[in-house]
Length: 114
Image (cartoon, rainbow, N blue to C red; front, side, top):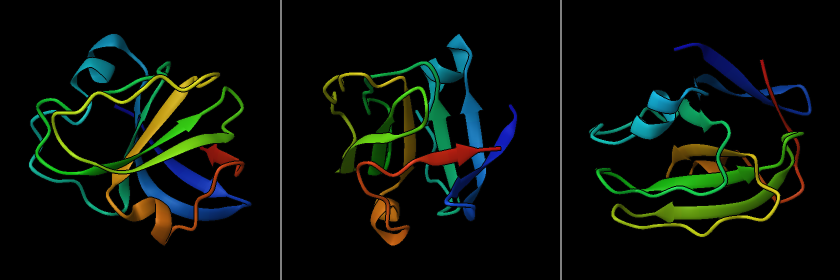
């Protein structure tokens, strides 16, 4: 799986972003992993709704439009939950719980993936 880097306003935020853009990688997501490094994240494309069944840790989820604008941030989503669909979302970025706040991410910000 290809690793991307995540930027906001040209500043590097995360240097290990898994690009889950095929059926199997989206299907597996973060299920059954014991943890995830704070500099790591998972980008699900296309995706507008997630669940956390089979997960072992809380995550922050960020719903993104096709042009990578943050539409909604769901903080500290625990295992065994289904999250609502986000209108106009095309991607979901999954981060360690608390990372969205540490990085200063807000609705309306635009991210860049390279």
